[in-house]
Length: 153
Image (cartoon, rainbow, N blue to C red):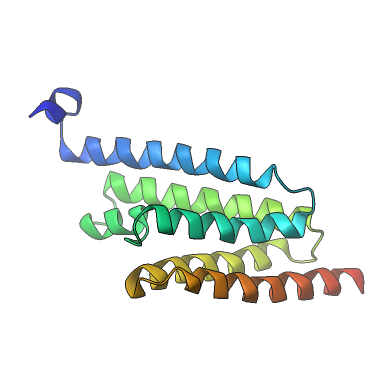
């Protein structure tokens, strides 16, 4: 009952939780990225941040995906919060890939996003955070190839 003195409904509670989690994630990622100057290292540091969040969450998976599953109606306000979080993260990846000077930053960002999301979900399902490390290694290959392609044009 105490929760309902602060939140009118479960939906409001979930929204507040997701918004606060998003804020904490962005701050955590900003701090981590500040440790690096090289744009390629920053991209790989995103995988390290994902792995850290997966472990700190007890390998339970992505809070946004979990909440989206609880609210299956596509127009539900919670789903909008989830979509905006994921879109914001995609934009951040695109900024980082553009800083790396690749020809197609949006394309590389999308590939890295798929690797991150897939490794996070699979790591949680299998209880194995090393899956994110495997995705990081594949990302390093993609980043190197994209940077090399950019340099040859």
